[in-house]
Amino acid sequence: MHKKATSSILILLICAVSMGTLMAQEDGTQPLPEVPKGSVADKIKDRSFDDTQVLLKQEFTGGAMLHTQGWGLLLRRAKNKTFLKKRLFELEVVSMEHPKEVRSVNPYYENSNSYNYGELNQIVVSRVGYGRHNVLYAKFDKGVEIRYLYVGGFSLAWAKPIYLEIGYPAIPYEYVATERYDPDKHSVDNIFGRSSVFKGIDKMGFYPGMYGKFGFSFEYARKQKNVRSLEAGVIIDYYIQDVPMMALIDNDPYYLTFYLAVNFGFKWYR
Image (tube, rainbow, N blue to C red; front, side):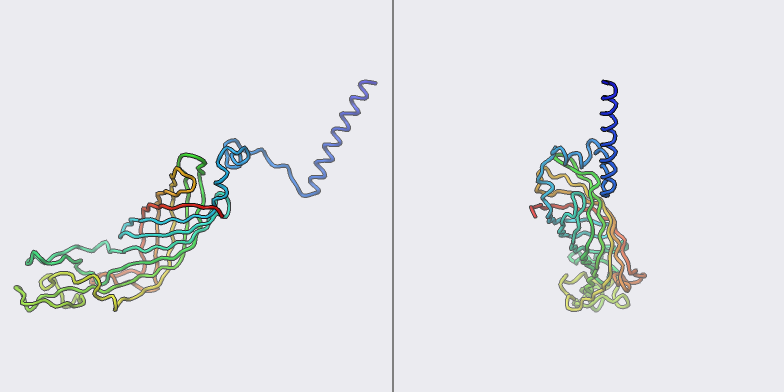
């Protein structure tokens, strides 16, 4: 009798488990796999990190960048979509120099201003973009958080004409006149030096285009509400026409640059 009772209980337990599994499948639910040890989900589950990290969804940063053709400033506004993903808006303003620019001075006058021989326009690029910022390795207390980002948007090249001080009639000059650089008229023999950087602003030209960016970010701030990061990546700008930066060479409608940026900012509650 005792063996029969035990067998009956086991059969009933097996039937109950089977019925529960069957009902769960009919309801469209599946049992979740076990959470890997040390994963983000595991840390969230056992509360081994600061709960405020989940709630700090807003982020604002600013910084400076160096790139292979100049330098610039940037502002960025981000918001978490999930714990590991952000969407962001950014604004950048950067200088753009041609790799063939050569700094020159008048060899006959020591007090002359330096200038870039052959430079037609001084180029400044502004960018407005939207993108994503995703976490590869999350930082819960100390250490470095590794992220990658991709951004795309509109790019605008501002081209300010170069004005020079031109000596007349010949060396030694009797007087100098301010003129817009013309490679057919001006040479190292009659260029005394560069004029004011503000000269020619009223004749500035604009060249619209687009840009794309991809980079990696390393966030190392000690406090949860602060942002301190180093960022490195690549940017490509493409314009609807050639941007006239230099004389006597072919100018291109695109720029490919590599950059390194330092960002500072803060996070706050939603």
